[in-house]
Length: 322
Image 1 (tube, helix red, strand yellow):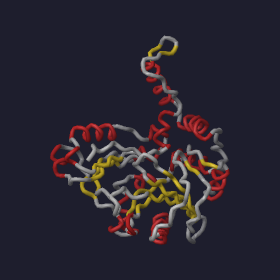
Image 2 (tube, one colour):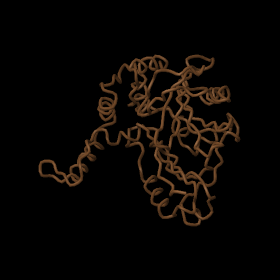
Image 3 (cartoon, helix red, strand yellow):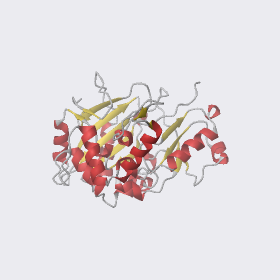
Image 4 (cartoon, one colour):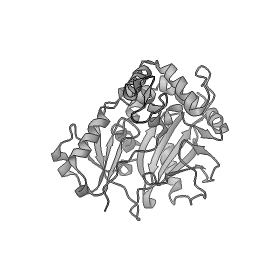
């Protein structure tokens, strides 16, 4: 078996750390200034930007226009407003460890991916006690995921180095999502979910827009082959109609997939978890007709996600009228 690969989700939110800086080749210089120094200067300058200006420039770069944050109309603009003015509930429910209590109360413990350990300090003894396969995650960001299929081909030293890097990352600074400042970084290990074919199951990202006391308007983004060479993102409505919509950097599949056998259970779980919020994205896994909770996301893509066609940004913005 090949060595486990380090895997990061292709999330636009994480890529924005490079949005203001243009990369340069190794050994190049600009005006006689070494590239490494030039890059550090730009990073420092970026850190000094106030949140409002940072998000203004970032949205312009990623979406192609300056946002209206005074009178937002689009989905992305309304998410940007959430970055700057987060609901106090966002932080504890975005925290991937703390949210487990909420999910257990609303859905039940059986919908949680089994938690193996959440050490306050990752030691060799912790590594030795882990099962042969597992997933290592951090609770304070959307990109900290490491799949280990065979621990005998893994090393404590590499995972420890990765954990140190994750835990030292201030995820708020990536895209100025302010509620991340209130999440204390922590490491945890979960059971590796695989379907009957031994593959990581698809991720069902259910965007829930709630305008009244009834069932929310829901759109499902199915992410297939998330950790493979050709990840795809297909958008469906609640009746599983395949929409001609692309969100972010996931390519749309050429043909629609069959709806999951437990589609009704997916929609029901998303509706329950989104109750009380005008918008939240509920991520779920459904391997072999089972159902597991992934995460809650209140500011997907940090409000800088290109949507094609562009009218979808405005249509979803109408659904998120505050």
